[in-house]
Image (cartoon, rainbow, N blue to C red; front, side, top):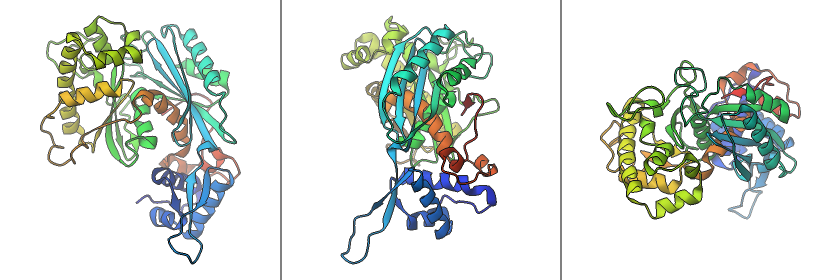
Length: 416
């Protein structure tokens, strides 16, 4: 059960709790909310009245089962009460989308960009924001811009190194420049964490408290979600699974090690196997043709990539015991389905014999939009997610979303 709290500074937290439950269930009556959040009927009524007054919730009469009496009122999220823009940065390409409060992609754009050139990246992001925000959210407001980038992001020996990262970058001050140009709050995250939060809010992990997210794109990343929050690690670089060595004496990796998982299981490794470019790996038509009629090199890559996927699943399960492994990212769903098929039977692990059939590996239903949806989720997650630190923010219930939900004003781009 989700539980609200009665301490004096808890109002923003309780409002977020109610919004999160309505989002998960799609529709809830006050009676159902009272049972789930363990707050008084009057407190729940006050919260729903406030959220309805500013348009975050809409009330609808449920269908009556009997002729006598009024049917109860159910509350739903108002899709047009707010939204955000997500930007996904991959080497050589930037993509963006505007997303409403229930995760519907309203408009998307993408462009090629030299990601070694930070000025060019900033110009591309500003242009993408301008292009996708032209579609109205009705009476709603744009809550911010989320940016998803390949990690690690905090300076380490392997940060911003290699063709699957933003090679040559030394800092992320360009995101502060984006905030100044757009005059919108900017949030950023490693692409794997963004994708995991996207699946938590709007995807196949909506009902999961615990799962591991595998982000398959040009590179390979991962994120552990527990209690509906991503585990960050000591320096914010946790679960960088792509650079775990899996093949002794294997293919040299740009991180300085050999035999790293990403060197066998990523779109960049597929490009190398085919003698193609990374830009071709970002072309849906090119990949679709390969998947439909694979040549010998494609088939050979799929077989070895599936073997490494089998190893990765066993490793993740034995180390972390997640409820499920959710696979998303920019790789086409048809390709991921092929790899999962070839990876069967999975290796024996602590999940074998315990997990329900089909729950050990779950594929994102938003595969092609996974990266930009994950980025767009960042401002929405910051606004909606019931997090303990919100308890420390004592805000008066004014008719502003940020005040009602206890969102801090950020002077710089905020990392999630």
